Length: 207
Length: 207
Image 1 (cartoon, chains in turn orange, blue):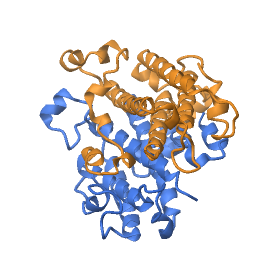
Image 2: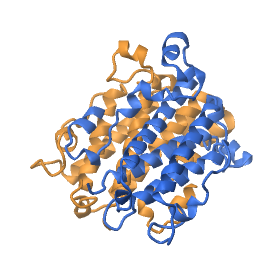
Image 3: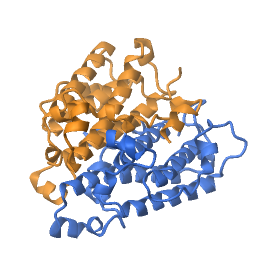
Image 4: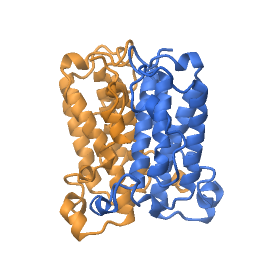
């Protein structure tokens, strides 16, 4: 299935390579945990529990999409980043800044730490593209993207599978008792989908 | 965070409502399992295991995206479905057919059953849009989409959390020993991302 998407369709920029999540190598995130970090150890010496397997698959999806975004955004020139993905739609720089701000907001939501770039919100979340006179430069967005995602990966390394099932930062203890799926894992999966959603849009950019 | 995406941006069709995965109600899929199906029971009488919670969050993401796609595609007229999402890009009917064929292929991949519409592949997977003289009609795609996703939901109801960690249909037993993340859960999450990816594209359609 996944090969079909990337292999056959000649307008493949409109489609998505489904292979990323299938590849074990992708899950072996440096610094995630000692147990996950060494493929040899993972495969030969330790057996992952079901909880660890569930988490590893989810983490794999996040990492694969981050890698795809890295490759795409870092491959664009400043001129290309200032173009719209389609006529009268968001510019690529806006989408990149929007994703950066969204990921930055995951830091407190997952209990990892304070936000690093809350100043991005005015430019990339609370206002539409092309309405603000001064937005962060391409260089600042590029740096913040790396910084924020790096900090997230560091934070992920300190969370056990059970930690991922604890409440996220935007829900009260009281509500969480009634709605136990408002947990950190839900944040991870919804933000992975959010990233894929906007990556789909970037694939439509004129080339 | 998710409110910002749907609330503030006036060009919100370019963004994504992150709320879906946050909402417990969404996970209570009719027919999933007796244990999951009744919110009262889930909250008051049974405690979900960690494995069940992991799966419920993943299932929530799938269901939320299917519901978003349902609302969007069923809300389009035939005329609108025959339009391109952006100049010289895929038509909406192609994306809908492509998603239908992709989901249809999940049936054997997840061990649920045989494909229902493998004839969709020629029109919607193995060839680009606008290259085939005859493709399935809007009416056929509409019907197949409902049928395929309904069959998937039925199949999901019979899978336990441990079943989701078993190998998917495209990996050998031998490879699975070395690559234990090539499991059914990985298929579910990657196809959820794939759906979000193309939904992002449909949001760019001229309105």
